[in-house]
Amino acid sequence: MRHFSAFRTLKNLLGATAAAGLLFAATSVAAQNTPGVLRVSAIPDENPTELQRKFKPLGDYLAKATGLKVEFTPVTDYAASVEGLINKRIDMVWFGGFTFVQANVRSKGAITPLVQRAEDEKFKSVFVTTNKDINKLEDLKGKTLSFGSESSTSGHLMPRYYLLAAKINPDTDLKRIAFSGAHDATVAAVGGGKVDAGALNISVWEKLVAEKKVDPAVVRVFYTTPGYYDYNWSVRTDMNAALQKKITDAFLALDKSTPEGKEILELQRASKFIPTKASNYGDIEKAAQNAGLLK
Image 1 (cartoon, rainbow, N blue to C red):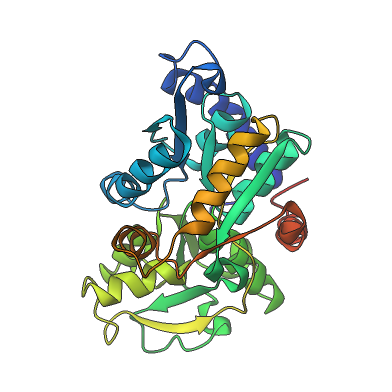
Image 2: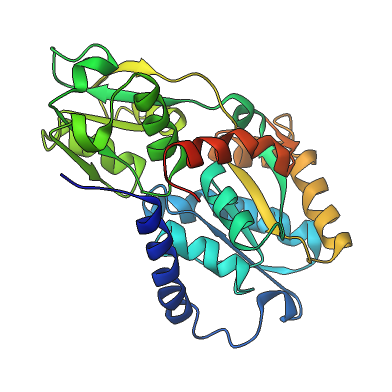
């Protein structure tokens, strides 16, 4: 049985500090102190090629809006995105709700979420399976289940939270739990028969179905969680206020009625971006504490 605890989360984050340091070793000064450059990253909740493809038009747009050279800096795991922002090796990160909470707690409140997609006000996770005998959360007892990354809001924290609410402890009531590392990898694990079921981000699920990369008649959704706040674009609170405003205004100005806005919003799977604030993620923090993933 694979056991996951708050201690392990802390251990992973601390260990990732060294890894993040190696990853960004070429950057000897804080990113925000590098004249004319805005370094941006994102939690690796999809494969690196897809993340780069999604970001390119947005990066070009932000470069025009801010007058800065925008560089996308990929990270190896969720913890590295947290450490990169806190240690000033990255200026802005696309966080999930839980990674934002981790960064905010680790930095003692020094992280500011700027914007989120309108869809992130009531985000959801889905549980999927190919097993005809699994039709509700309780049917997972004695089965195998894959989460996404250990630090994923929609791929681990909230699915775990709702399992516990259904009186199912993943660590003791399931035969085995695994962590695929990304939402699309979870679907592949379920479809390939490596696990009986998986939990992932509803947005990625809908994209995979729309792109016909998964057959929903074979891999099917058997449970959808209630809504919760999730992803946002965050910066360090000490970022120049004028730059924060330029970035925020640029996101808020994206409009599907323009060719550029349509392309960017569709790639980001957003109808529009809206302002957000740290207090929106209070329930995520409580869920993490209740699930034993944050102290």
